Amino acid sequence: MSSASDYATLGCERPSPDLLVVRLDRPEVANALNTQMGRDVAALFGGLILDPGEVRCVILTGAGEKAFCAGGDLKERDGMSDADWRRQHAIFEQAFYAVMDCPVPVIASVNGAAYGGGCEFALACDFIYAARTARFALTETRLGIIPGGGGTQNLPRAAGTRRAKELIFSAAPFTAEEALAWGIVNRVCEPGELMAQVVAAARRICANAPIAVRQAKRAITVGSEVDLKTGLAIEIEAYNRTTGTKDRLEGVAAFNQKRPARFTGE
Image (cartoon, rainbow, N blue to C red; front, side, top):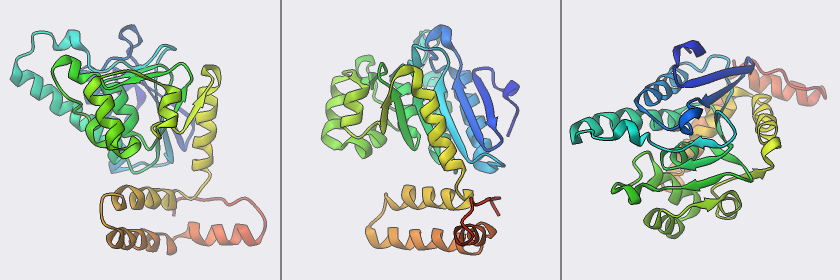
């Protein structure tokens, strides 16, 4: 993975070798998504797809206290030709898809407004913790477009088709508490406690066998798109990839010896 200095619009921290915190870092414009941020997100998560290295979990959040991501930077888009708009959006697509395809778990820590593409970034993650003050919306129909970063696919899978239609057709904002009730958000936290709770969740993931976690993610993600019998076959294929690992031997040994397991990812 590239160093943090390679990303003009992202802040990267490694609280420990196995945990990566990525901040969308344009706080002066509410972390709005511009072309460079699209390139940076695609490059960073693309690198994790190729080789996650020691990283066992990623936290995606926004810089500052008010916004996770306000969506596409409309000032940059002002006056774009249709062709330029499509070229830019192709970059954005690669960014969203790279987050979704990341082999290690990605937790969204939504610290503020997550509108438009910002909401889609959160939905692209494996699950979401949100500050009580966070607000969400898929606002694209107010701009003459539709969600194009996975929103029309990820929101129905989280909240159901009827709820997703209501939210996307109306472009209405909704609260963190509503998102929790509708199955979009996993946990609502007080703003000052959000990151601590997200880090605690990430550390629980990091403590488990990384190959097993990655294979579980693959089985859930791919299996949820197919019929039950095919999903069960995908699950067993993923399961069998864990049985020959040193981590499986270590997990059983640690259980029998009544000690914490020391997983190495082998």
